[in-house]
Amino acid sequence: MISGDSIVALSSGRLPAGVAVLRVSGPQTRFVVETIACGMVKDRAAVLRRFRAPDGTVLDNGLVIFFPGPASFTGEDVAEFHVHGGRAVVARMLEIIADFDGVRHAEPGEFTRRAFLNGKVDLVETEALADLVNAETEAQRRFAVQNAEGVQSELYLSWRRRLVHARAMIEAEIDFADEDDVPGSVSDTVWSEVRAMIGEIDHHIAGFHAAEIIRDGFEVVILGAPNAGKSSLFNALARRDAAIVTDEPGTTRDLLEVTLDLGGLRVRLTDTAGLRDAPGKVEAIGIAKARAKADRADLLLLLEDILSPGDVRPLPGKAPLLRVGTKLDLLDEQAAGDAAGRYDFVISVMNGTGVETLLAEIGRCAAEAAGDVGDILPSRLRHVELLGEANRHLLRAIDEHTGGQELRAEELRLAADRLGRIVGAIDVEDMLDVIFSQFCIGK
Image (cartoon, rainbow, N blue to C red; front, side):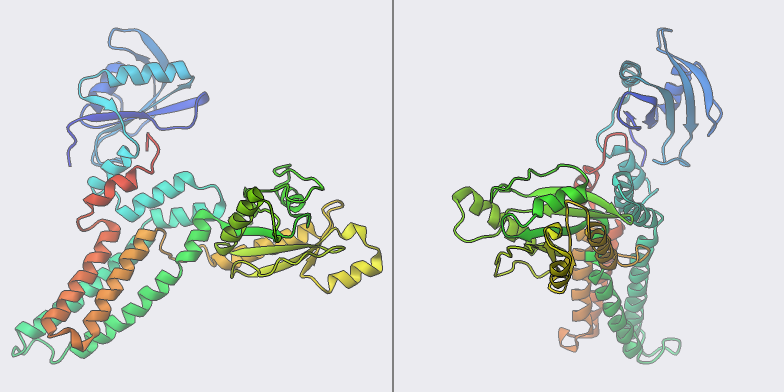
């Protein structure tokens, strides 16, 4: 693909900054560099130049790098201007560059979209780049880097190649059954391999929840009766006063959320309204939200005041549950020992007893749910949906009631088509706007 116009955008972080990077891509890139940098520069070398507007006005001093296509990120001529990161400097540079004929400001994700259309990355690698830009934890970074390097794409393409081969063997048997160089009755071998592939894809789909935990976070919801110490624990784990704490029951009426980084994994911790019968109107809404949040949780913390346990049955959600006794500091040594036998953890937010141990257990549960970050997992819901469609076609292919070999071979083609759509090898135009709209401008 050769673009008719060129694009420019700020590709570095928020201003002001020490250095800002402006990226240009497209057929006018070389002319922009020659004009603003007062002459051409050596390919792929950072060169210090004084940048000038077409009328000779000095804009800034900085570095310029030129990457000739197709050996560039987008596959087109690309240039980067490294300038001082003041708002006025960047605004003026962008204004001057966008004033060149055939140059305009980039739309969100347009650089990466051009890279995809020019065959530099596939759709899975494109989505991984978006994940890498947005990564906040070490696990997210490792997961995104692995997918950006094509590991996930290669898995899907290998399945597709196996299906293309299987279909070719079936069709060869149909068309050339009387030829000596076509193995007799290849069907049994082919359908056996297809059955094995169905199992492989099912196992891969089952890993989607682990991928969700890595990308979006491990959901931990704090539940309990009013005044069980939920907001106090929430603040202690967040290490700041994120929730209002009072002795008045029903203080927390809405969901409060903080994000923790535990062992490189993102953990989302939610404080909820106290669960009790006959609440007021507003509090009832908060309790309904708490129960709905618990239904989507990966781990529940059920808090009870050791001195005054509250009954919150029926317990919401089906996630693993840790029973936590609170206000341990109000008990003497013997009573504290008795209480420890009734709960998974006993804590005191006032003096910190047991809080770090509980936090370590939350981190362990998150790590166990996420599994090995190095595993190849489906990283998007659209991957799971297309993999599910592929498997449905494969199940019809191995079903002898589907019809003759011709119809079963067609099911193989449809399954391979779905795998191709994941990486963008087949007709994905309708998905592009959705995928690239997730990117920031300049990427």
